Image: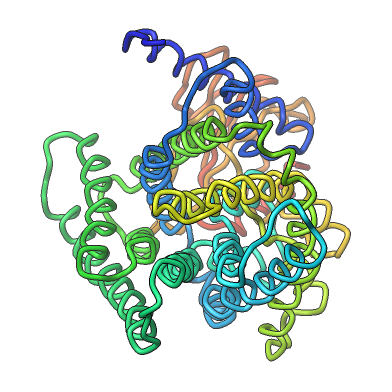
Length: 496
């Protein structure tokens, strides 16, 4: 049935509303929002409300754009100081970990579908292709779950997991393309395969590093008339990173992540507003991507492959991922057994494997749709089983840190933030009767010398304070301190 463009926009807005409210509800129960976005797409699809969408090409295009935004934003949010201690294990997991996981899982799939399961049979190359599609951890899922839960982990595990998930897609992508070529041609030369791998790796890194640094120079010297144009400029930089690297024969995903990492760790004008812009853009495209991928699948097609999907999914979660992690992280003694176990558990599958599953479908590979449905099923299993239990697993293994004093206080009433080069700390507090026991003037408040009250909010109005300003219970006070230590001393003196 043909619908007008206006009706399409109305439907799209309703789906966004539903996804946002469902995600908010799910957060209270510890359910990953990304899983709920995926389920909304399934429910409004052909087997639910009846929206027909069967275009892997369009889903792939949307997925590529969304993945670029997610990787770029994730790179910008990652601090060099955090990932520096874990660069080596992170890179090893992102390259060798993906390869080892694909090989172990591929052999299992071949054995399973040729000796145990009768509903589907895969050749060895087809098994390796299916395993390669699922071999990388999903950056969208890892970033979303770790950051939305505000987890602070011991042994630098959070930056390790984010570095791995942000940089392991290129290896999985190359394995997928290689397996498709092997299925479609018998004249594959090992030398060309190795050359292609290093070409994509080297060009992707060089493009990300060089253009990332040039982008910061451009942003600081272009002098645009409107602040909003700087965010548009950064979007252009992100797309150029992907396109330019891909045209040169490099890996665009790697270039985007490294470019975002380089840009996010340097100083440039309007950085705070651009970071907020990309944060919102990331959530928007995550919703769009998961809705689209949910629409692409028909639930009735998942039932015949449920058995093989459960067995492969559980094998990856309990066997191939842990085997890869423990064997590759064996030399790194600072990461304990429990740390390695947690890294194994956070091998989340999400949108990236589903996007990669569209490549054999578009290439006309035999049984590609069956592979897509299996990948989709395993993604749901991973998000449901692993995604919901990440905080619980961290606490159970004793790796979670009570980070109330380490995290920057969230300013709810004063939308103010400080530039990265400023070492001062800001916070807001609510005045209580206990704080006013020595007098109700600002000068009577027990504050260290290195702390100033810069603004007061009272009954919706903002006041610039002076020493003789009278305080009232319920006043919201904005503090600025020389450093975090002075701010913590203020909290102690005020009994907070």
